[in-house]
Structures are given as C-alpha cells and as structure tokens.
Image 1 (cartoon, rainbow, N blue to C red):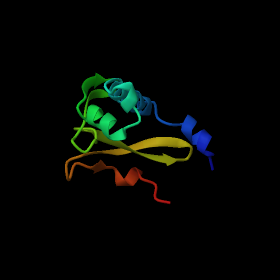
Image 2 (image 1 turned 60 degrees about the vertical axis):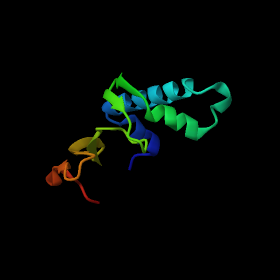
Image 3 (image 1 turned 135 degrees about the horizontal axis):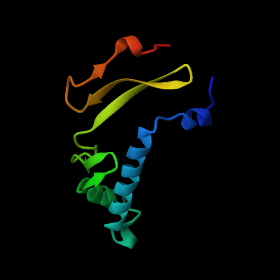
Length: 106
C-alpha cells in the first residue's frame, strides 16, 4: 500500500493543468479585491465567479454558485500502483461515460 506522499507523486500529469487554472483564478480574484478586503471570502468569490479566461486546461469560467462552467471531469481508478482513466463525467445529467470493466471495486 502506497503512502499519501507516494500516491501524490503518482498523480496523472493532467491534474497540474487544473491546479494551475485554480491558482490563476484565485490570484485574479484576489487582485481584483482591494487589499483591505482580501480576507473577505464573499468579495473574493464574487470576483472569481465573474472571471472568464483561457486557462492551461481550456476555457475557464464559473457558474453563479462558483463551480467551473462546462467542466468535464476524468474519472481515474488507482490500481496496482498506477492511475487508469476509466471514464468522464460532465455537469449535464446523463453525461457520465464509464468503462465499468476497468473499474476496480475494493
């Protein structure tokens, strides 16, 4: 069994694209708020929700609730020391495409 640090080292490369976009959104949101309001999460979220930019992972924008708009999520299974892509899911109902034969249920 791998430790948490060992599992972190084995993350798929694509994960970094989303981390970069999340950091960009946070940085832009913080930059749009006056320094005295940078501890006000509500004000920061208002700025983040209004963002639209071309990120490393593709176009980035947010819903009024703060979720990424038009997101498609990859579903990975960690099995035998490796990440295996077993499907995708988007925010539309019924959008999941999963290879159940590739999923390892433990």
